[in-house]
Image 1: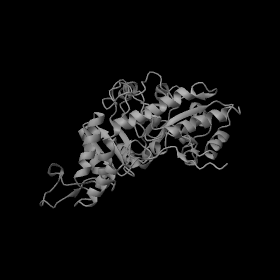
Image 2: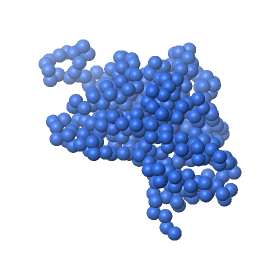
Image 3: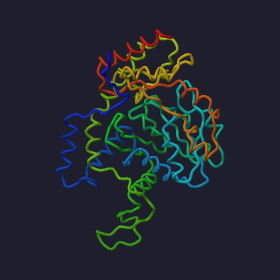
Image 4: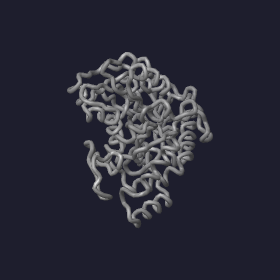
Length: 391
């Protein structure tokens, strides 16, 4: 019998108030470089305990800006996780830097603190920990390492809007944090990203980098010929976010606490139902509360629900079985060091990061989004239970 269900691994939620917010901008005088952008930046910064925010056209552009602001140039090294989307490493290459990977800790699936220490060299300029799937990486411990090595921390929090470790998002530890507003994330603006920081100098660099390196600020001009006058004082890009996107982001952000709560409730049901199945390693949650309210001290934001399958499962067959039954599971991620570009240009090869490769070989991401219907969640769990009876 043909199955007509199609449950994506992630998707956006667009409500009437979101549409109204966008339409209001379309009817206004500003489609870009208008008032909504500043409001969006201030809203997101305040929520995460940051003094400054700079919105970008997408998360990759935000990473590029962060590496630039940190001063990454040819010869500099950045340390990051091999289990991440390629942009975490690629954006450093845009600045001339060299990505150096530190293997992951299989208890958290995030970068290993011990492995970071092993990879430090005099050329290390930045450490870029990734809060994979929304699990908040331990920035406090990484801060101690970064201070001793005199390097920056750029927290890749693209998955981790609203996450907390011991009551904080971690802006007191990271020099910068980057967020993403891709449709499968907690907050959707179509495309979009943002850099958060408490450092005014970094904020100024980011703002210039986003806008062609052009400024009208009187204190930065060499000359000032009038109110029309501007100067290009550095080489930047056109990485601006539009007011259309910002308006959608403002509207969506009003629901952030509810979105986080819904994702944690879904994760709780997955955990309870899958815990008894042999050969399935649940997402890391040791020491973290399942979110009941926004005041919880530790919050896993569950951008993804990442299962790891023991080796007696054929991951390809599991993936195919789920897709045949309309469950569009995904794999996150192919280790960056195994990508052909990184093997060819940097000499990485299979076996360099055994924990990352072990994780990848067994990982499968189940559908996770905050408006998932209970009937779909129940169907996913029942389908997995039926599948396991064949093993």
